[in-house]
Image (cartoon, rainbow over all chains, first blue to last red; front, side, top):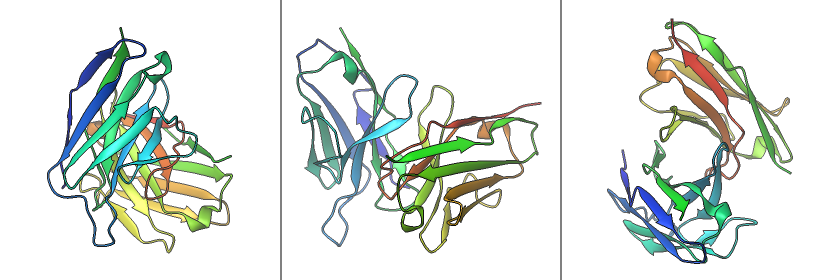
Length: 112
Length: 114
């Protein structure tokens, strides 16, 4: 199985500051079709996860442009600009290059 | 608006069975891969099973041979038949749409305990 390792596991950010979460994969997530199958989700307290970013850097419908994804191959980053109170929760990366789909351990983001 | 509503969770004894359902609306259900993902209490996420548009089925090793995923496109409903349940299957179970897990339901809690 592909292992995804997120760092840090927790993050405390002041409102208006930026935050970055890393996700490293045990193997390249680049497929022969040229796409890279890495996704980011946010699970707000008491809610199911919601898709933020698909295929490394594409924002899902309705997602704020304060969220951006980057990276390639095995190293990926989610950046949150101008952090707001509504951004608190646990962020997960996920790969769907091969089954089973696997998730990172999650990064808990809180506001200072 | 895409909506996914899970049901069927509850308390079951080890070795018992449960059938989860996920009622879908707001999209062409038959045109999408569907998935079940679970979340152990206060823990991370684990993909459990997926079913293709043509009803090809896929499972995590941890549930293979015990769980069966199916779909009824005429009822816009996804199912997960869970047999030989173990304590370690205790979790919130979510259904999710698509290869990208674009949308998730609110989840249903399965507790396996004597």
